[in-house]
Length: 162
Picture (cartoon, rainbow, N blue to C red):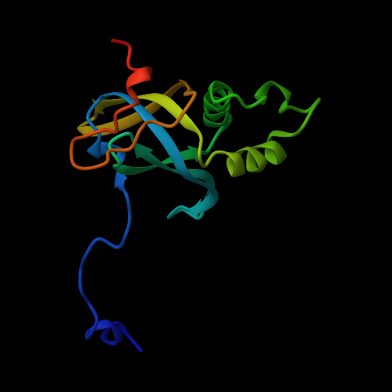
């Protein structure tokens, strides 16, 4: 059985994958983490690299995905710094406390629903454009979702500052 089995149903379309960071303009965002999963990717050379796949929803409703590649201690430390900004007790994730390898999966399970402030930046190096999302802090509440194209719900009059 080969590719012929797909001939009658082949219909190229977006299969539900979210946009990547490249679809966001550089700037500040309020993002709600909607999904976070640890995984392992096999490279062409046979190397296994641990990953953290994130999915975020912007305050305008756009869904974006990104992946953190945990290929070395520098990347793990950078992830730890981001998780500290989100309020996780990463300073206890060491040989004297809870091992990082045990604490990270537990923390990842708690990420969906967390609202954060982040900055998206882009830069070019050797002809390739790279996109980064830097977490600035945990936000106190989810951003309001648009009720229709271009509008946000209004608070009650007694909550308006004017």
